[in-house]
Length: 169
Image (cartoon, rainbow, N blue to C red; front, side, top):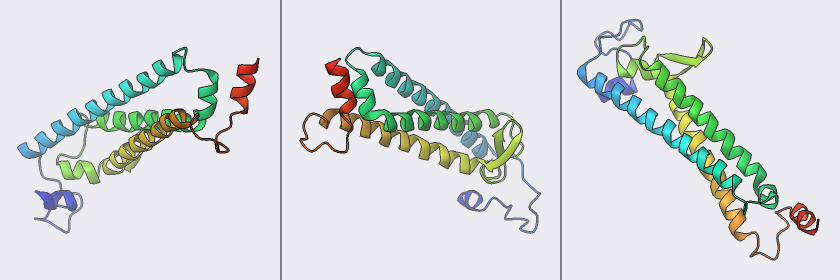
């Protein structure tokens, strides 16, 4: 079965790129697992972005802190939103798939927004994971910047002028 994932063409008829055998029980289990996995990721993204917004609304999270981390925070929020959009694309195309085999779905099925289907499911899965890990990295940079901003004497990489202006006013 791993040959089908690496090569979505039917090994019984290598000359035909149109022939797709009917889904096996193993394929149906894979579709169900992918759907459950994608739903879990969408829930994780929703929880993570909600946590970020709740932390931003806490009184201790002053405008100074937002100034320190505004760019990595924006990258993190955008990346989580993009990962959620990719996950949504995958989850919505599983029930209406045209390809009957799991390998055909991953490599041949095209997905996209508003009827413009230009990406394979495999590409969207990779994009989803890349956006998620970019968001994790961006949020980690935010946390580290906030934790260590008061401990380093040489802070020329952090613009503290806004913090000093807001605390003086």
